[in-house]
Length: 105
Image (cartoon, rainbow, N blue to C red):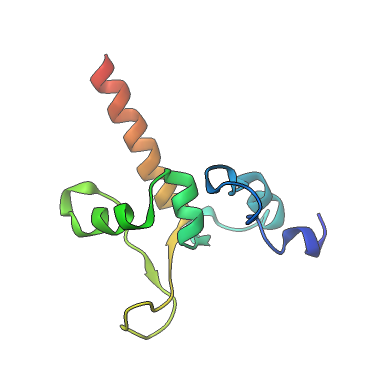
């Protein structure tokens, strides 16, 4: 995969629900530790299928278990850049699926 292809793993030309290509992440960063890959809000929204306000509401609820973001700068100002750990977002999603399956059983 070329640098040009790896430059972005999302596309603004397709819906967010299909915008994240996890295979592209793995291809672009084959040696990367999956617990150290940071993703920004559009990718989080795409993976979990929730809107930005809903994600921020989940962050305020202690019992939601939604992973907290990592600060990307020293700023505490509103709008300061943050990102989420990919493996934590995927683990939260898997936990939601498991809870659904347990409830159905």
